[in-house]
Image 1 (cartoon, rainbow, N blue to C red):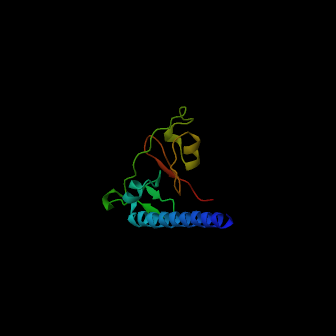
Image 2 (cartoon, rainbow, N blue to C red; image 1 turned 90 degrees about the vertical axis):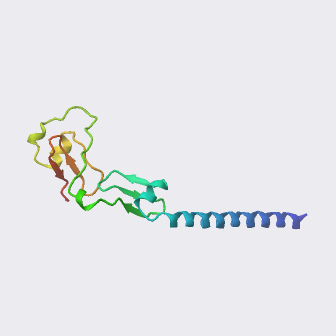
Image 3 (cartoon, one colour; image 1 turned 30 degrees about the horizontal axis):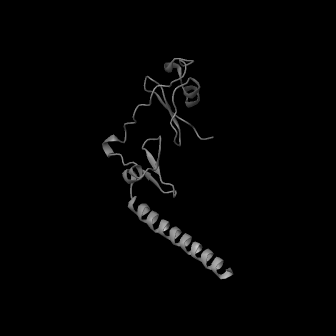
Length: 127
């Protein structure tokens, strides 16, 4: 009776170890298949709201979207804020802090940027 319990427990442990080994072999193949930004997005990676866009895999690898040289000087427009109207007209804004305080959108990247509707772009200063 005691030997049957030991055999059953050993069998369960062996099955669990085999399942864990199979999981690691399969996920290693999936990780190896992700070699760039597009692969990361297709694999369900987390896409950051930045320019250029970045994708992060659960294992910590990061991939940055490639931007053609002719598009590198063009920053896509940010969406209008969904908050109340700005506190000050965009033409009177002179800094990143004033831009954010006025309610205009800021990017979630480093360094963060804020763009007014008239196209002014302000960059957060380290400090």
